[in-house]
Image 1: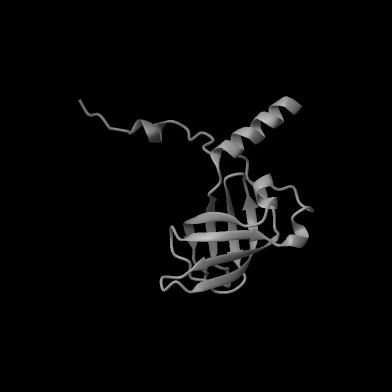
Image 2: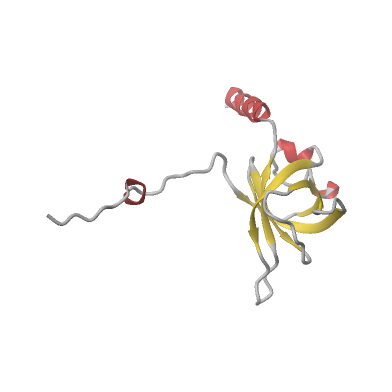
Length: 135
C-alpha cells in the first residue's frame, strides 16, 4: 500500500493568526536604540502598518538594527492625535523589540523592521473590557 504522508498542519487551511487587526497607516516615527558598543543611535522612519501589538516601519536612510534589539519607538508629536492609533502609542515612547528585518532592495526599496510592542498585557485587557462596555 502506498501512502503519502501529509502533515496535518499543511493539510488544513491557515486561519487568522493575529491577535489584533493590522491597519495601513503611514506616519512619521522615530527609533532610538543602542548599538553593540552601547552608543545611542537614531533613525527616522515611516510606518507601513500598525496593530495593537506591533508595527512595521521603513527607515528613511540606511539603518542597521539587528534582530531582537530593543528599540524605543515614538510617533512624532504633531501626528499622535490626528490618526486612529492604539492608546499605548499616543503616550510617547514605547519599548519594542525587532523581530523581523527586511533589508534594502537593489531597486531602491528601503530597509524595514517589524517591531513587537513591549506593552503590559493587563493594559490590553483593560482596553478590551472598556470597548465591550461601550458596545
